[in-house]
Image 1: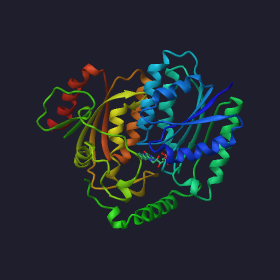
Image 2: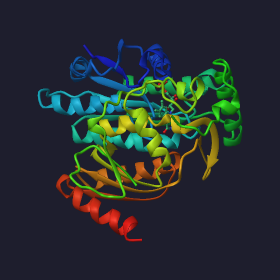
Image 3: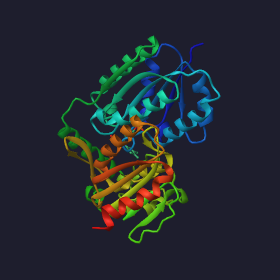
Image 4: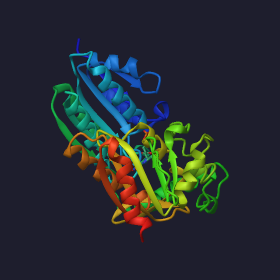
Length: 202
Length: 168
Ligand SMILES: Cc1cc2nc3c(=O)[nH]c(=O)nc-3n(C[C@H](O)[C@H](O)[C@H](O)COP(=O)(O)O)c2cc1C
């Protein structure tokens, strides 16, 4: 049976935006899929699932302009274990970053593609999301849902795909809205804007 | 001068502090954002990293020595960098027409980045692009990326820091 697995590479996987994107994807995929949340103790278990799947989707955030270390550790492990397995799934990517520009995801996408090529996996394509922390709770969530639906269709037909999305607002407006968002978050912990802007690092 | 390395460096450089991140316990960032909203400027995971990131903040001259995997810093080095989130404010700004974070008390740096273990030109290209991207939120005002084999690292380190910083 064709097996599709979705691997969440966020450091806060259970509570992540990546998980919210995964939920949409699972809804739009007509075939069954399994969601797996990476942690540093389950690399081997998830590797086994990956090598027996036909399709794998890596869903993860951008950290420091590249891939989260938990996901990198997993790729290192896959490379090691790969010698034991013959078959390789086709791998798709859904990446999201905090900043508005989805272009900021490009290096992370190159890193995954480099890994896939080196280890003989077929690359299926990518959905690159900018403003990934904000878009799901904004009036623009329909845009990202639409892109995930497209992604699901491509996955089902085994087609390659490269699509992008982000909030259709100006950078200036994104900065204002983002600053307000963080100010409210801080105040829910009793922190004023001035306290949040402290120069002190300790 | 601060040298952050993921391999043992058997050198003494009078002007430099050398931190081998592998001799420290640095846990994964949990992406809790408490360093922005609950304890601004301070990480709630009080492991060895809390002694490292304040040193990164005040360094004007910094060296990264790290193994490169698929064009990325390898896991230990990347983990340390992810735990530097307290250096940034949550608040945003536009820098060279891109959205980025406001910094806290972070010095602008001149940096030397020595990557070892790369496999080919494509991987060098990815890593170089990564450093270019990182320069925005890591306050790297200027930097030089050098690729080396693991055995060449010390020789290159000595040559580069003395040419760039010590001889001035
Ligand atoms: C340690 C760390 C580093 C981050 N670095 C970046 C970055 O370089 N660029 C960016 O746009 N967002 C960055 N972010 C923001 C995340 O990509 C963003 O919050 C994303 O929505 C998180 O997705 P998740 O909930 O699936 O983990 C960073 C977040 C953390 C915790």
